[in-house]
Image 1 (cartoon, rainbow, N blue to C red):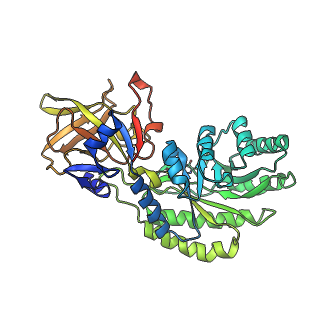
Image 2: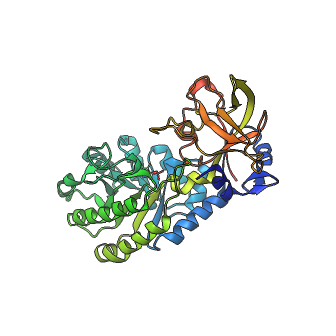
Length: 408
Ligand SMILES: *Cc1c(COP(=O)(O)O)cnc(C)c1O
């Protein structure tokens, strides 16, 4: 996909990118400072609607908050998704502040602090335990509080998912309990009064291949079928993970969501209906829900030519949007889609290199991109900034001010 494909969902108005219904320069005036992140609520809603239309009705949508924990975004999505998955005590607080019911919040992550586990048990959320140490801590918290804790076992599957940007299951992992250990663990804790609702299998992230995702969902259902035979009660929680990717570079094609929905319908109407009548399958998504709804907006501070190469220096950079600089887990650096937001309809006449304001060559936002002639005070917009942006970036590096964040 190229940059124009990313302009289309936002639309244009008066020759500018439209964000939250406004021309970008007006939004910048309304925010009052650059750089800033803007998340478009209309696009968030459209994304949820698109998912609901493509996935079987019985599938529950969970928002993996670590992709974008901005409170306004969390509040907005809390009314639209079925569940929220958190990965820290602070995220748990944000979820509990929202309208979502506590028993619809799940807490994953290796290395939950004992105090966080106690908070989670007190709140009545589902603790997705990743080890027997965590199970012991959950039990202790339940005993101390006089509460029966609800948990799900996060399982490290005995298969790996190919084609994921980040693999988080299969082989040795810090995540989850190895599938082959789960029966013995369930046996050991069967008389403790812990309520094991079911299982969570999250095998990888940023996958753009629908067939591989569908295959992983099929294998997860088979794995959970085997494991659930060791549960004392019927399975009530079946978290199939997610891993739905979004196109970041020109080489990436969007995920075929309808193909995933079709394959999932076969699973839901077949083995899931037969074997797990009391469990609604959960699909847990971070970047796919929010990533494409956000932009990072910077202003050009300087334009200079060095030995024939033109540079635009902007007032933002990798300290706010690390991933766009290629330093957030990417094997090969490729440009994120970017445009001159106040000149989106002008033809791209020149090749320029867009760099951030940090004093390091790592702060590269667009390497030799074709843009309309842009200069000081023009607005450079980086797309795909709604997930793993601000909170996944080293904001203290070089001590520049934090950017604003708005939901529009
Ligand atoms: C990070 C994470 C997610 C979200 O991953 P995305 O690629 O943003 O969809 C979902 N579930 C778990 C357990 C995670 O750790």
